[in-house]
Length: 160
Image 1 (cartoon, helix red, strand yellow):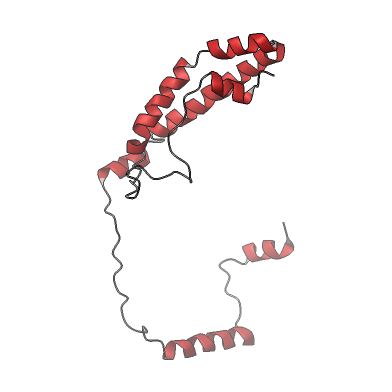
Image 2 (tube, helix red, strand yellow):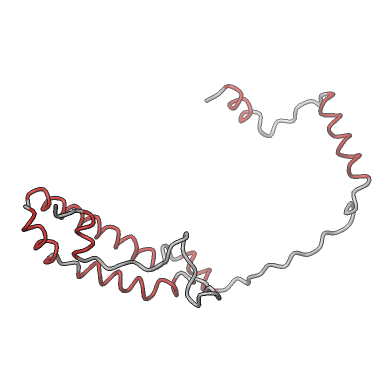
């Protein structure tokens, strides 16, 4: 830790004596306030564009939302498939690899992906895009996920 940073932390809450520089700064602040139009007037009330509801309160207390848990499970299953496929890819020849890719079962992860594609916009409360009539993009990309199949396998582990 830097010496200056350590001293700054240790001096927190300590009232230092006023230096000539600090006195000039305070005088300048007082002078700025003399002609300020909002001095001694209450500020305008800022209205918020939301109202707290019970749903958001319970969601904050309940831990991760269903779509968050589902996304985590999808990522874990996909990582497991990639590891298993990498092991098979290392030992398989080109002709047999296409058969392995075609016969690989992605039933469980594809079921989760289907549920994600169906329920994510509702659970995440995605707003609608009035121009397209579809849900808005999430981080610049569509929210839906593509089911895993032989094409997905061959994209990651090419046959030849």
